[in-house]
Length: 286
Length: 311
Image (cartoon, rainbow over all chains, first blue to last red; front, side):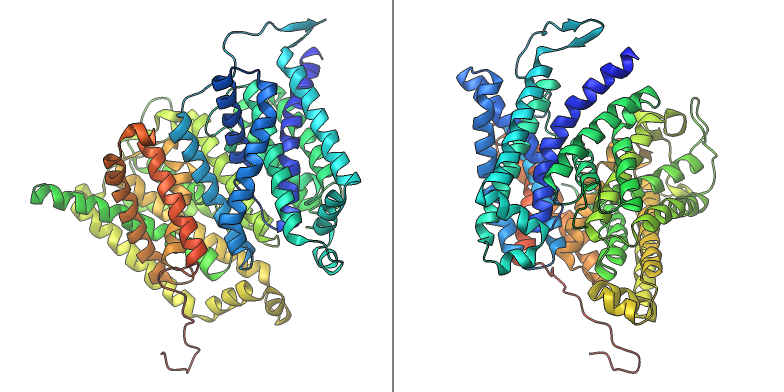
């Protein structure tokens, strides 16, 4: 029982990281109509941006977080303008291949600049905190708190601002949204800004929880897509829910199968969703 | 470099081009002809390579296999082992949109790789399987001819398929699924057939590869080499065009090999890691092709209809 609860806690932590990645992926899927394969690598480069800020200015990680988010958002918009914008009018699948190429370019760029070995934000061992039989690292509480703040911020943005509503409208029904005069180009730029900055946050949290590595984001891509599909394509709230479900399922699965197969668990849930309920938990526009 | 060294490098180079050409042809069956986005090439490549490794290598402690079977039995095994896997993936995804197929295939490839990393009883884990012989005791030169004949055979069969009514249905599905459905074709079935055939061709490539390098380990089946380069080859060469797929394999492998020299010229202090720099270059190259010439070097040409004279 204790092991179960401990794993559930880890699952919620992993789930909140996945959720932040999945919100961006699902919005890009909804607004631009393609699966963005470089999303995991946005996470990784965001984490490395933060690493640079932490080492150069000797700041705590959470202070570096906003800088990394802004830089990654800028990078996402730049990549969209230079690459994706030019091929939006051809088949969506060309966009998909391009995002696959972008993923590799980003990953090799990280390797070239920061090297390919493991890195951490802070050296030394954190004292774990004990609550009865359960142990936490203080970082876990920070991650969970910061992720919650970001999710609330996204919720407020989507529900209260004009741009947030326009984004949801475009994701719901592109044709209708365009007819009503939504500024499509600005919505697209905002989508990349939100998606990029949330991915960066997810990457920083992942780096705090484990360590930084050039393929750290790529390995989470499959669970992120699983969360996106489970939650319903284009549904940010679904993505958050999907992320938590996938995160918990991955951690709890270690009770019955070897931990190495965690990505396979995410994949199995995704395939089951595709087969039995392709629209996802919250009806998406699949 | 001496003539002999140059010749042996040429043999090595062309063998890999041939193996990649087979995989690019397999991908062309799926993407170029049917419009199916498979980014799990590495997974089917690995299944092919491991199957022949297990069947044809000598017995070893700690793992299943080492049956010492002949080369052709190994290759037939490679292709056969791929059928059920491809069938299941294709069956699940045949009715789904392109994006879902993409995500599902990359998942399958990753799981296949995880399987070979973790299930040591079968694959010897990360240490891999060594001692896979080049067939008939021939050297690399002789084996190049074997690879070359397989490339030619695959190409001829795929050209026949492309010009057949079957190929026409596939292109019709690619270009207008709804109309093809309305014409009474069982779209899901045709898709499944194309997917399985394409995957089997990739597995054949994997089988040939194992006998060329004489060694397989999970490292060789990371998405970069197994999947990404094949995609660059097909897109650069011209998807939908079988000659283009093969030309793409040659050109891209030439560029990939020359980035090694290029990376050697740039000081390491500037690029950090040489291998990362090469991947970076090839990624940028693909983006440039996609943005400027998405139809590739040899654009697709529709084959003549029956009775029509070819142009």
